Length: 61
Image 1 (cartoon, helix red, strand yellow):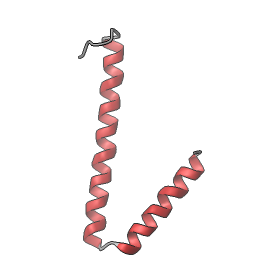
Image 2 (tube, rainbow, N blue to C red):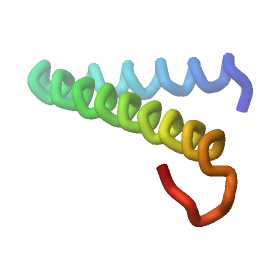
Image 3 (cartoon, one colour):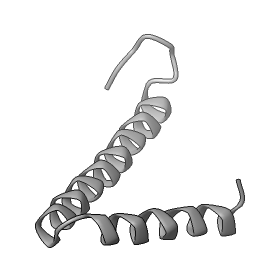
Image 4 (cartoon, rainbow, N blue to C red):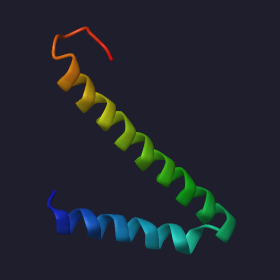
């Protein structure tokens, strides 16, 4: 999938959710998606740091 396809998919999903969920449900879904994104960034940053500091497999920071 290229960038244009991904943004189109996300936009379509957001529009569908906006049409079928209450404002309260949308707020909760938005908070969950934000937390998911933040957690994924944190995990990737930790993984990147671990690979730089401890390149030996099996070692952790």
